[in-house]
Length: 484
Image 1 (tube, rainbow, N blue to C red):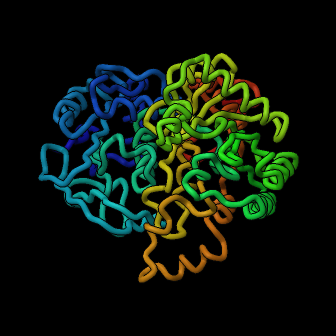
Image 2: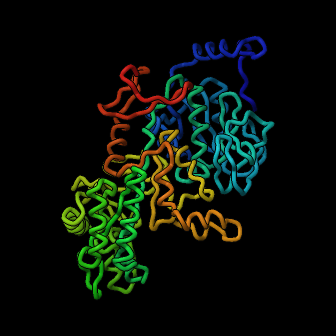
Image 3: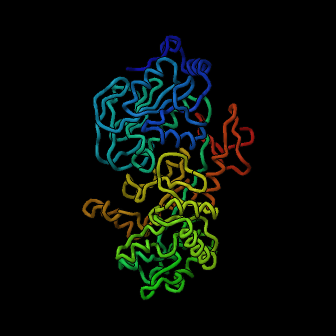
């Protein structure tokens, strides 16, 4: 069912400018996003409300609010919009299916979606019947979001729109839809991102598995990274474990990898590298005693034991590399005791990507899944597109190539990108993306904290001193100014 305009807004009798003025005058004040707590869209709703400073989410419809929901909730959302109980609604449809109400028929296509604004993403894409509504987002494959009046239907499950490049680009049409309805700008984070390289120069896990590079090789890698990042004016977070094995005995990392640690320290002193605590031996030592190589060192620790290991790792890092800007447990293996120990030390810590507010106390979430699912060959433009909607991309490396690169690229069809990557790896290319400033975790947390403290009060943006917030409205993007 199409949500039709009123007779007074008939496009045959009213000019576009007049229709906009009439709609704005009749529109109730924006009342936030509305999403049922049990809805699959609830985490995304919380995340978008935080990301764009839209205020608290409501758990029920209200005039002026914009609803979010899954395909199963579409009929109820449609009725609420028709009755004026919602200003509009966004429905997420992640599967093929027949038309139902305002949700058009759709199919799923595999391949590369070449976007109208440039660039492309690879993967599985929901494509709608063009005849069923106005395309709000489209690519070479077809329409991926359609709008019918005050209802937007997005091709993808709500949970997929956070972390995957083949889905996150759909945040753009969602932002544009909201701007049409809410009568105020979206408040965005500045166009920044954060790169992290884990397990530098090696870990106890890698040594026991026979995958660790020797000191000379690792030191050359670090020096090349520093040189490349310096020329790109980018920072890189390096997650370093404080110990390595020598003759099966854990020793301080600089005793086993002296040249590598010296190269890391030079990069830190140059302001190119920012150290992050990555534990001690990067292993569950109880599991190791039983013959199992389990990397999640902190997954089962008490607060006292986690605190002891953190204190040991932090003391070594401060002496050998400098003050760490953050802590990331191997494979995000945080026990409750570990989280408590990190909080007790005021230690900012990385959390896995998931929909919701990016900052949770001292924890901050990555925004992209490792390996960047949806990346098409060497097209990194979707990372820049994330900053355009205020989502800072976080890209994690475990080598100079992104994870899964060798399995994702096929030599029979991807010979050219493979040849280019052999000359310049992902870690050299991504820091040179135009329009993104790559910062360390310390500054990222500062920006997230400023953003969390920013509010829109009676149409006026109130931000803490030093905020680098960006406003997005129908006229485009602009930096927050005192007049705002």
